Length: 206
Image (cartoon, rainbow, N blue to C red; front, side):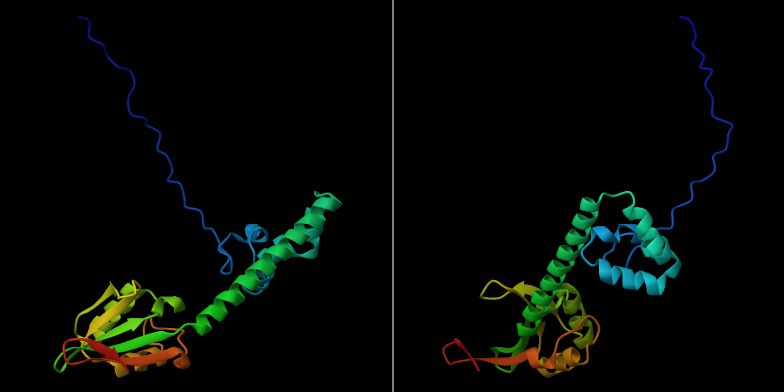
C-alpha cells in the first residue's frame, strides 16, 4: 500500500491578534448613540450625549448632520420619522408615569409573626414593587442579623422574605436609610403588622 504524505504543514505566517472594538452605549436607552433614534427616549438621549460626548453629538445630531441625513430622505419619510419619534417618546413617558404611580401606591408590609412562645419570625412583603431583588435583600438581612433569611411563598401565593427573629424595627430603619439594596422606598409606604397566636394555635393580625 502506497504511503500518502501530506504536503500541508503549519502556516509560518503569524496572525496579528484582533483588537476588541471599544463601543460606546447610551446611558439612557442602551443603544450606541447613532441608533438612539430607534429608541423611545431620543430627546433625553440627545441631552445626555451633548453633555457627556459633545463631539459625537455634533457628528450625529448637529444641524449639519441632520440636514445631511434629511437630504437622503423624502419629505414624507422625514415627517413619518418625526411622528414616530414623538409617539415613542409619549408612550415611554406615559409608561414611566404609570410605573411611578403604581410604585407610589404600593406598600411594603413587615409582619412580626409569633411561632411559639417568645419565638418570632419577621416576614417582609412588597419589596419587588420598588425594584428590589428579593434574594439579594434576604442575603443582606441574613448578614445583618446573623440569622436565617429566605424567600418563600406566603399564604396568598406571593413571594416574601422570612427572617428568623423579631427584627421589625431594624428592617424599618434599614429601609428608611436606603441601606444596601434597600433603596427607593418612601417611609410612608411601609406598614408594620403583628400576627399573634391565639389560644388553640390560630393566629390573628393586629
